[in-house]
Structure formats: C-alpha cells, structure tokens
Length: 61
Image (cartoon, rainbow, N blue to C red; front, side, top):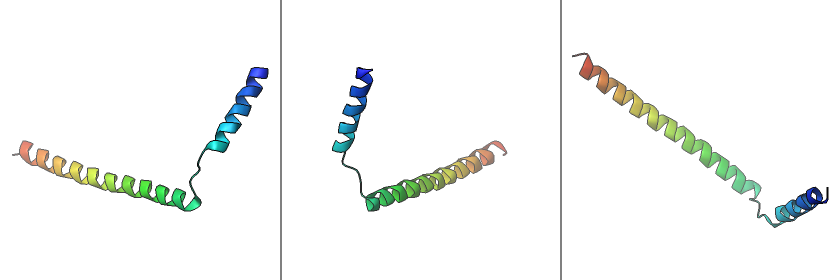
C-alpha cells in the first residue's frame, strides 16, 4: 500500500513541475490543428479526384 501512496505523491509532485500552456496558447494550437487537418483533407481530396480522373480517362479509352 505504501508503494501506491508514494507513486501518487511523486506523480503529484511531477505534475506541479509541468509548464502548462496558457488558455490563449491552447486555443491557438487547437485552431492550428483543426486548420491543418482541414487543409490536408482538401489537399488529399483534390489529389484523389485528379488521380481518379486520370486513371478513368486512361483505362476507358
């Protein structure tokens, strides 16, 4: 039982040492991730459309 208590005490001490981001940083990072995800989705959708169109035009002739 003592090992478990020591584990939680040391975990709590380590959590106090963490440098947490500010609210503004968290919002900015979240918006960046969402924006990049949407951008990559659009990019790969366009590539998929181009390759699909190319292969279709090659194999249907």
